[in-house]
Image 1 (cartoon, chains in turn green, purple):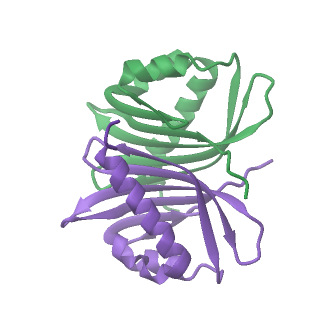
Image 2 (spheres, chains in turn cyan, orange; image 1 turned 90 degrees about the vertical axis):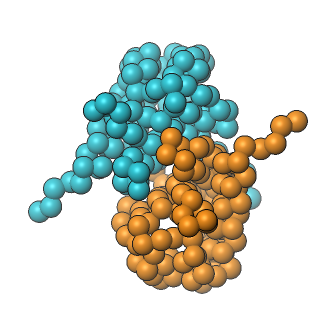
Length: 127
Length: 126
């Protein structure tokens, strides 16, 4: 029985930590970003930890809960980790919605930080 | 009115090219991958250009059409380009399904190739 590859272990731990913090104490997400990080949130771009945290802290809901349907992790050629998450979320009393999120993780001074983060709700132009 | 950043131009061109090839003749997708590329297709891992093209060519449908709802592109610290696509697809006579796909593009010998790709249908444990 093979061991789980390192990138899967790191990716899975990061994803679990990210959503746990997001759902209980978003302010603690700050440790996961650096000044070089970029976030695209529903098409809006934010550069650097400060701008990213300002966006995440200003999101207009009281309660949120994420539920992960699937997560995939891959090593990149430059020793980073790519993690893609598909899931559902519930905000306040709104209906459950699907979401997609993508992270690139980089090892900086022995810590895995998020250098790239892209979030989209699973809303489509219905044909 | 500023020019689009280079990563958006490259990412958008790549995405357009990818789906055009995919929808018309997926056996031609080989040129966008290299031997170091990895694909995760609905949780199944494929490593290297040959295995990836084999997987994509053997997908069990005759016709497919993708429709892109949104695409996001970002530069990565290592000078790669990260692209995320959300859209819908229709295979043969099946119902329209949502999908989510990610590409990591790297400049390799003068061309932008895809080193990492992840595809998932937007199906949830309801």
